[in-house]
Image (cartoon, rainbow, N blue to C red; front, side, top):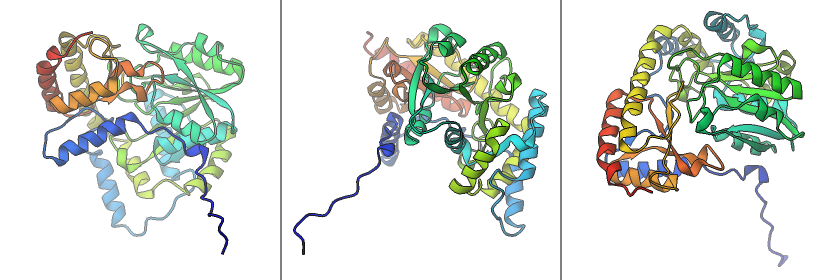
Length: 393
């Protein structure tokens, strides 16, 4: 027997993805719950309401109707047709069902679009603050994120000038409207300028429109109004509150459809059939969803009215989504430590900003308000007693 010790296989560099700081806060939350202590959860962007009643009824009927097989790689044809009809109804756009691909949540949508649009080694610009999984997914695919920084002075909005100033080797741009964590929404004119700047540079433009339907004032505009070259990612997790159903969709330029179809067939076969059936029914639930968005609007206004009097007065009011991204420099330069202290001493839990912004995030926290109004009231009651006692910078 050889005396040479065996070699251990080495993990891939693609898997060196940073774990969200939010999960460390989440683990502390779970420990508190395990001790039987109260938690007021404003941490995660997961609506605390059930799925639309039509979606539940459709899923129940499907469960009793017989086998639930795979679907085509691009999704159930009637769901893709339903999504196309949804674009006609909401935006007045004639989007062919052939350009729509059903995905396993928006997360799968990003992976498929990144794989279809970019080659390994390319650099992709990401507007920050933003959902941290954009960066993680890019790195896992041997792509390099390049930060486009925004701040509260412009409402966290990217501009065409930022696109024009990008290095020559950038291959595409990822942004969101409404955005997580800021709630910033881009106007039709904003999207037109960004679309034109990307088209001029020959850049892929990938727009996360997952929070469409949740807005306060004017409805969100879609980049699809500007032309057929952008990639749109959307899904049923936020507006329809179907997070665990893991169902999303892409609207693709026609030339990418066969590439995404091939990738989808190899990587996921198809999205869950039961979830697709429920999603099709959910598309006709705007009447039910309107009441939920009204509660989010009430929660938003309570935060905007109350937090400034408690010392958290530096933020851009969100246009959409259900987050408030607050500058906490009046109290701390370490958002994660601030969030842990707030959880420990009040039971209120929020997300530290470093997950969302790789440079300035340590100065921010994100409150998620997609909860019942009574939860927001309880959180503000705790913060009203706690924040005035904190040492000010």
